[in-house]
Length: 458
Image 1 (cartoon, rainbow, N blue to C red):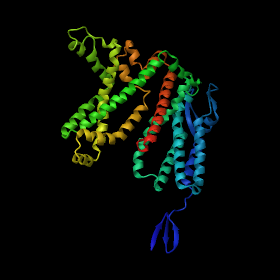
Image 2 (cartoon, rainbow, N blue to C red; image 1 turned 45 degrees about the horizontal axis):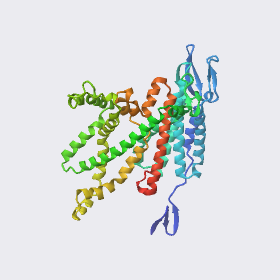
Image 3 (cartoon, rainbow, N blue to C red; image 1 turned 180 degrees about the horizontal axis):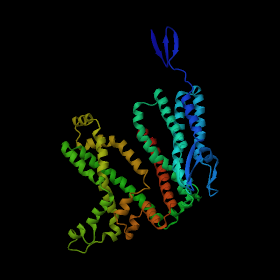
């Protein structure tokens, strides 16, 4: 009689390991050799005096002077990283049989990703490296390196799939992960802009390092308090008003029994979310315009007209109203979907016990909505130092009279850029907002985790 014990099979008193011994990955060794051999091949080419010249990978590694001494090519850091990665890949392939299979598969995958990224960065830098030459192009040596990296990525995924670390569902997620990597994580290297004084003549990487000098302008100006106050207070108001009304409308939508009416109201309330903020600005202008606005021509038709675009007192309320009107549909549908997922047996049991609608909402709906509310608030709190640029710039029509109540960090940076064209300062502001937002999320998530671990994001 056979039985299974752990990862072994017991048969007639004998133990047989189900795992096979790992072998040396000769295909990965071949890929690593192709990657190393690619440095002998042309990595880039250029035209000088009507003739085409090529530069090998090793020449880019060591640096070279071309065009009769006119152009000096410095040693490429990304290619050094690529060649070290290729050597590590060969070493991993040889030692794979002595490694844990899962660790080996992850190592192969990560090394392949690093190699592919290095080649992609190099291909983007070819024009900058050979900026003083004519018609610079990437050679087939770089394509060989890229192919070796992509092969290693595929091989690493195959190893992890065989080990059941990855499943078919995980591969369905890969396109989304790739998009996030390219769109969200690779650009993070651009944070270096916040610490440099950009000189377009020498490029980003060769520009002068100035440390935290770019951050000073956000705090040294007399408007620092105003823009920080406006950004934080508006966002706090948006979070409170948006979530309270979102919960209220979500509950109302979930109480509509007619499916046709429910879909009609969902569509109607969601429409403002789909409208561009520029269009919203002109809709607001149609109501508030001094000469032809609906309010001045109807409500104040027999009185003195109000110049809304020169009156500061109205705009905190106008901006909160416009933001709530535009975003209410989206937040209410999120809350409604959470309410619909609540077990209806709870409501039926409470009805039998004599609970009315208000008591059901108070004792069932709101407590079970708590995880959704906490998650949304945590995400919104993380962006408390950001503001909707269109809302604070387009809707007030860039009126200078209203700056004290409509100026936020984002609009201030934009207006500063229009005057100074200083990209480094804008990058410093963005880095500051990101770091502060991340810190706030960590603090609030820690507080939530102390109270109830299940409600925390992580």
